[in-house]
Length: 392
Image (cartoon, rainbow, N blue to C red):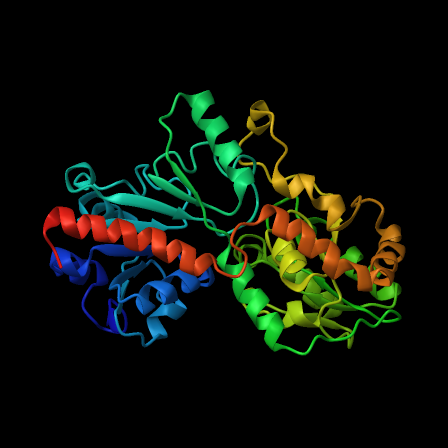
């Protein structure tokens, strides 16, 4: 793999711009290392087809920079004005990204896109619906959206109708990280549920209304009082925006033998060990429920809403609709109920795999093969671009 823009190497942005068009027909963009788990199944399938991929990342610690894959060239391009200029002047055939609102001034569409026929393709990094947790214009500037499931078609078409937008291409893709988790689960020996002393993973989202920012310490204490072992996994953005919330956890439980604080959000070991997850509006809750086929207990904090007008579409968000089906819900001011709720869900352990698999398979597209499906879609677009430009 070629690597540019890190450790004293030439600027990744400049190195990418110097490539001939034939070598940068297909461009992936990642804001940070968290994008890789969502891109990896697609990238692997594309490389297996012989595609050449340019992978632009704004993170110097992106794990893709450490990979050795023939056909994959990684470029650390930073952020700010230089990145915006690169996107504004980019000449490529297909851009694949998991960044909502690409197409606005911070990350503009290229001024050469129309003349070249560049296609912008969106890949989701959550199974949540498109219209509540994302900004209203999150997907307006993409040409193709690779949907997690059919429910997203209705949401995006409703958005287009309400805003008077042209219809974009919507294709069922699925969810790559779910497939990766399912593959890992199949290779692991399933840990038996301990009904008397279950392990509970607390893995919330981040923000002023979320678990660790509001009821983190009393919630963990309530779980300990109920005889549970606890793995607390704060979101990286909590550490960045409200580090005091994590400091409070460490002060209260840092020395407790039944509490582990896990900062590696990309790893799956904590998910494997947990008998149950406690979460709020985190996308990780659905990954856990559908990947490990174990229940989630939701703390009903205020919803994460980045589109205050989402209710105008008249569509219940997927993550709202399935909450009661994948576990249970308790109020943040009723933490004394958490112990009984955990033990009730754990007591039904044998029934959860079948129940959760049924919900997953009814709503998530192409389970187990999303990478191959996306690769076929993208390869068709790169092939059409090469033919139009007379490239090999």
